[in-house]
Amino acid sequence: MKAARFDALIVGSGPAGSIAATVLARGGARVALVDKAKFPRDKACGDLVGPRGVQLLSELGIAVPGAMKVDDMIVVGPTARRVRLPCYPGRTYPGHGFALRRVDFDAALREAAVDAGAEAFVDRAADPLWGDGGLEGFALASGTEVRADIVIGADGASSRVATAADLVDSSRVLWGFAVRGYVEEAVDVPYIVLWEPTPWRAFPGYGWLFPGPDGCGNVGLGLGTLSSRAGAATAARELPAFVRTLRDHGLLASAAPAPTLGGWLKLGMVGTNPARGRVLLTGDAAGLVNPLQGEGISQAMSSGRAAAQAVLADPARAAGRYRAYLANTYAPYQSTTAPAHRALLPRPRVVSAVGRALTAPALGSLLAPGWSIFWNDLLDGAQPTVPRAVAAVAAGVGRAATARGRMRDWFTATLGPASDDEATNPRSAPARVG
Image 1 (cartoon, one colour):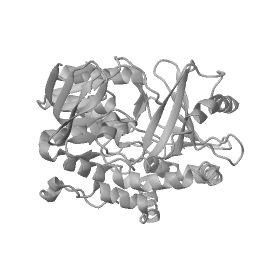
Image 2 (image 1 turned 180 degrees about the vertical axis):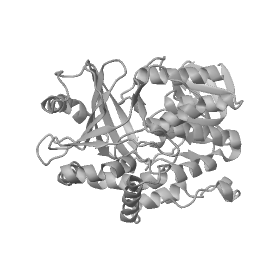
Image 3 (image 1 turned 120 degrees about the horizontal axis):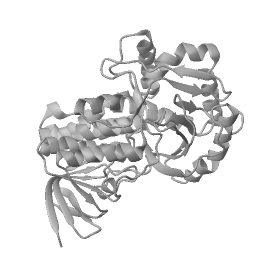
């Protein structure tokens, strides 16, 4: 049986895995980048990359040809009222994102990783391989054994790495499912639609119509299913009705998108330990998807870079350093919004009321700038303005409302200084969440 040894094995060549591979390879590490798909390959996604993602790519010097610049977003409420959410430049990020099909975006990132020196395997991670320090690799479906000092799971919501390393408590995970298709119509600005299939009965998620760089639009529905994975068919079943609503609102002329593609999401970090021992989880594998609006690409790339930097700094203590990064960067927001997601999802009438209030003519316009900053998790690094102050108030109210509860306790216990490597190095231990 063929065997190979590397400094790091990364399973999954999406944004998180490719960025991790690029940073590691540039740092001199021998990197195996394993993905079961031959690139280019497609993924279900809204195809938008937020301002933090744009900044990260700029810092790494990675160009993605064909990207279409987007900035402000329009939210369409249950009564068809519209509110524009401005996209302000921050101190640490630009005032825009971009749109690019995932089939092209992911291929560009993977190419950057290979150009940096990562060795790509088109193969499936089949059987886990164990060593004295725990999980140290996988036997691939082709029969090759790939072992490494560090294993990084970047293999999506249903992560094989996370399962093998026993890092997921399925009873706590907040699942989501999204389905998307393309329409042959130009879309000028991103639309988020707070949809009600019937009056005062909000859809348990939201719909979207986003621009595409090739004169097409990306249309889709995403919904939350809490800890169950039984509701995926709902999004696909309701998509034609949602498209009819877009037509009724004057946003689309097409009858229906085709073909469609669906995929699972893991929201709000909760239920997944992102790092233990020699195993680190990034992107969707770690649940790094915004529970309020479903963004995940920027978080995936940021976590991939942070995981790689933790490994390069000190492989023996990479898990502690990486958890500290997540505790300080994402947990304050996720530990507030994940409980809100869980509380609101089973209450469609409450969600309808909130959607109507936020898009009411006077209130919606007043709150929109601060709402944009908070909703898109852009408070950290925002310019010191009135909208930032409004977002800070919203964040403070959210923290107070979720300060006590099992979910907050889970964040603190999981991301706190619990392992031996952090205990011997207090500087690498994360602070208490929230």
